[in-house]
Structures are given as structure tokens and as C-alpha cells.
Image (tube, rainbow, N blue to C red):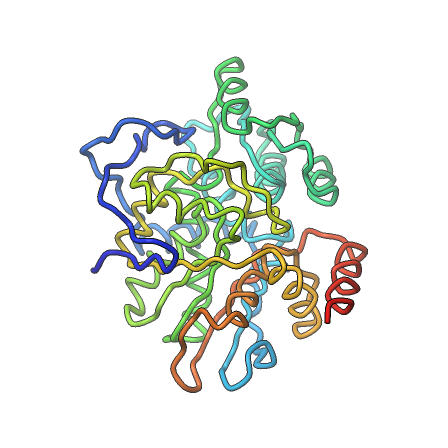
Length: 351
């Protein structure tokens, strides 16, 4: 396939960081190419996670973008309120031997998913979270039995804790089992809409879009996979431009808190390159306006991260054929009605 089309920058061809490092640090280029997730691995993940992850509805919602057939994959209705439970379940269930404890890092949704699955399997879970994490997400991690360590250095703290305790780091996106689990979202999409023109995917660390791109390449090569990043958190786009998954020069700070990944990893970067993924960015004001609009049109409680796809559609940055079939992945709904109401009031106040 062709090189990926980054609509915000042109990718170069430098090497990637060592995929065997669980923290996914930037570093010297290596010659070994990371192994990409296959359709068979995603199908195996779908069988593995069936007891944990729900099959979520694909809802028709043309009002989000007039003149087109628009579907919303409602991952906010997952058991933990986010698609993350798919990857967490597949990763934990794939570990052999199963550890007594794991450490992970997360803005909240991945941490809650790992905590839920860990509790069911008898695995102790520690989650490194940013000090300003959304209260609903902090509450979810604790409700599912996870221990929280607040830190500004998510990746470094997770690695240090894992070394101290002699347990693995369960990476939220730079892990083939996590990517395969997230790819099950796309399997369900294609069972209902076999050949959409476009799938729009919110992008943080890149695990979800990697899984979606792998499945799309195998089942519907003519479908465009477009990732949407906040302008203030263009983690994967930055890695494409630099040619390696190094951290953003400025810490990510977006209202779409679930997309504030400090950097991507070697595996997501390899998937985005191989599968010709396109990337667009959206501004914070566009996200704030799109969030209550998406909630109103879908009648779903979604979080800001889910709404970046609507912001991208309405920005005019995505060229679509006439009467296109478009699928948006609503990645999560872990927010509060009060926060959504405040966003709606602010959006209505802006002329």
C-alpha cells in the first residue's frame, strides 16, 4: 500500500523505537520492523473478549452531517463506558502465565478497563493517572478496584513501579494484543456496513486506529480510515513527522482528555504507515462546539474525545463523495451531565 497521508504534515522514513520496550520510548532507530496485527488475530481477540466486551450498536444519525449516510458506533455503551475494555480484556487474557499484578498508565478509560478485567481475573491493577484526570474516570478506576498513583510522568512512573514490584506494564496502545482487541470494533462495523466510504477514528496513542486500519485493509481496502487528533495533542501526527515515536515537544492539553497521550509507540506508528491512514486535526473550540451537538443528535452521553470526529466532519477538512457512507466511532462516555451542560451553554453563548 502507499505511504500514509498525514493531512497535517508529510511523514518521513526514519526508523522506529524498539517495540520490545513496554514503555515505548523514543530512541535510536532499529532495523527490525514491528509485526503488524493480522485479521486472524483480531478475530481470535473477538472470541476471547466476548464474555467481557459488549457488542455495541451502530446507530444511523444523518443529522450529524447533512447529505450523507452517517453511522455512530456507540462504544460509550461498553461495560466500562469506553472501547478500551476490548483491548484490556484481550491483553490480560492473553498473558501466560497470568501475573498476580500489572501496572498501566491512562487518562482514565484504559485504566478503568484494566481494573475491571483484572478484578474478574484476580489480578491486582495499579494505574498511573495525571493529577487533573476527569473525576468520573478516577471514580471508575477506584470503583473497579484499581489503585491510582497520580503523576505527571505517566510512562516513567509506570515503568518504575513495574520494576519495583516485578510485574509487567500493560501498555494502553503499544501492544499487539491491545491493538487486536481494539480492532474488534471494526469487525462489528463491517458486519453491519460492509463497505463504508470513510471511518473516522479519534486518535490518542493510536491503538484503536491501528486495529481499525488492520481490519479495514483486510476487509474493505477501498474504505478510507481517517484519524482525528486535537491540535493541542497531535501525538501520532508528530511521530509521523519525526519518523519515530518521540514525545510531543509540549505536553498535550486538550478538552478531549482521553486523547492526551504523551507519545505514541512503535506499533501504532507502523500500522498507521503501512495502512495508509490519513490524519486531520481539530481545534479546541471546534471540539467544544461539537461535543454537545453530538450528544443532542445521537441522544448519547459522550465525552469530548468522542466528539472530535464530528468536529472534523463539520470543519470541511474531509473531502467526501456525494451521499457518502461515513462511520464515526464514539469512543467513550465517561463524563458528567454537568460538564456536558456547561459545554452546551458555552456553545450556545458563542455567536
